[in-house]
Length: 434
Image (cartoon, rainbow, N blue to C red; front, side):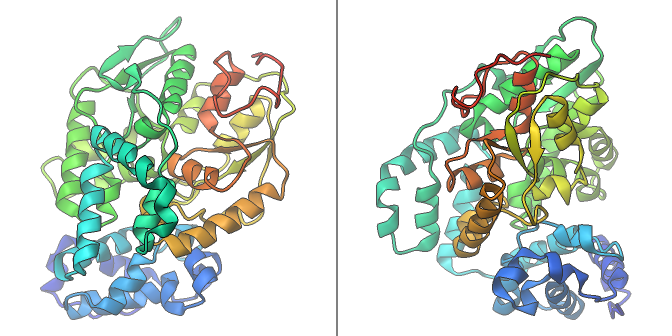
């Protein structure tokens, strides 16, 4: 694709990077075939190719973002299926991130939109605030259908009926390896996940220590910055990234930074790019090189073969894991090694509609994608659904009676950990056997 940026515009590192990306696009349209919003809406401007043209025009002209451009960029899930499909290697993630930052700087949203986004950015990344907000939302949950604003209604409807107590594993400490130490890793405990489901981090710690890892919960680490990053709030996302980088590099040398929420993992692995022009650039690149999804670490640790369990398990591939990080086979291979019968739904490359805060900001499109995903999962008649991202788990779990559990919970169970709470005893009465 030909571009027309001026020499002055190309002095800006973000514009220079976007120019590289745009010039790699041959506008073949392959991306439209795997774009969830294009499949739902059928509008070329709601496909990656259409959005690329909108972004190119906005950035080249140097003009403030307009309502039309903002509407179509906001509808993008950032599922990154287009990056998996693209034969030319167009790095759409960096391009749309730049577009969102430009929108945030140049476009004045309606007052309610500004207030809603501000509230989300000030609540969800902070576990204490998020917990309080969810407790309050539970009171309004029965009246969600009566709320005229669809985004507020979606927020109330998504509020869980109960919350687990705060886990002690979230506080700064080190869990020693059982037996000989093979690795020393930091575990990212996250923000929303440690409020919504404490079992995931607990299972991760048990499993990693069982396989010979010292697991460090670093003092000062917190939200990865993804939520505000995808809103275009660069200064906030960079500050959250910097806090994590400093926390993880403050102690004894690490062999890996382990992440069990794939949406966070995609962002942490991109810290090197996000902070490439920051004084922390070298440290950010170091953390990006250390960041690993928990499934990648478990493969490195030679997760053991376990006895067959005979439980038909549908694996849901989170977009951030399969497209954002390119981790596709490891979770399925591990589940098979753990003794589960793994099946996949049709169109497993398509998003479930969660996408961070997308299901709160774009509830209509999100609901349609959720319905399609659940229909596909239930069509393979699973006893369980396994996923590697808390957002997907909440999204899918809100529309199905099939138990939805994190992959790491099943891997922990198979090697001696407790039965995941979401799994009823009627599914399998046998004790897990390594």
